[in-house]
Image 1 (cartoon, rainbow, N blue to C red):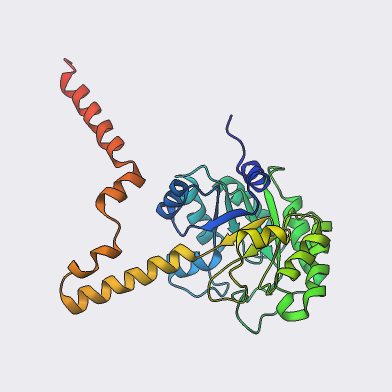
Image 2 (cartoon, rainbow, N blue to C red):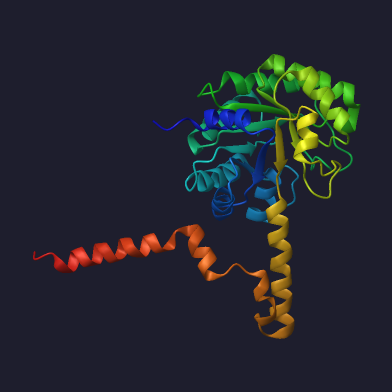
Length: 296
């Protein structure tokens, strides 16, 4: 019997410390990450908005937009997927529906944040957060609607940039009291702050190591020493893909050929290895061979 995705995520947190959770913007990215050896995947709200819809990460995309990408990724990998559910996509009933649909789509867990509905990227200025009681209610609604007891509910707080570290820790502890399984403090700037979170919330803490943001590029050893249990790289591959793609587009436009940027490309052989392309062709060969040999 296949383990539920949430249980696979919880086991991964226990067996790899910190658990490296790597962002995948689509099914093929997820397959590459699995081939490299990662044990958990992340679907970023910014990744959905930027890559799938060409929009900024400002709370514009919907639950259905998110679910479509979850389904595509879960259909090609058994790795557990942690999904960015923004602010929950609405009030208590919408959060309940979100929980049910995420379970059906194959997610292992979600995180809900305490920003207002008109949210901003967590590493941008001028964020606004809801009252602590409203965030408590968001987590309570998610816990109440949980279909699978193993499904992970993570609470993200953006309060550090708005109200300071102590208020953020207080909010995180309130979320744990509401039933949150893990905590995601956003835009942390020191290992000591991570250590204080880990000591006080008493549940696994995630470090968001997004590039060009507020959090330094801490090593796994540094995070482990600070008590961090999950290390998140939400858009690293997407940024690299986008930079390479822009170089290729510019070269083709200016040079009239792709010859000078072939070194930036994955080869056909490498693509086929990730897709297990040969097995598909072999299946076709067997089917057509059987059809031709069928005397009827």
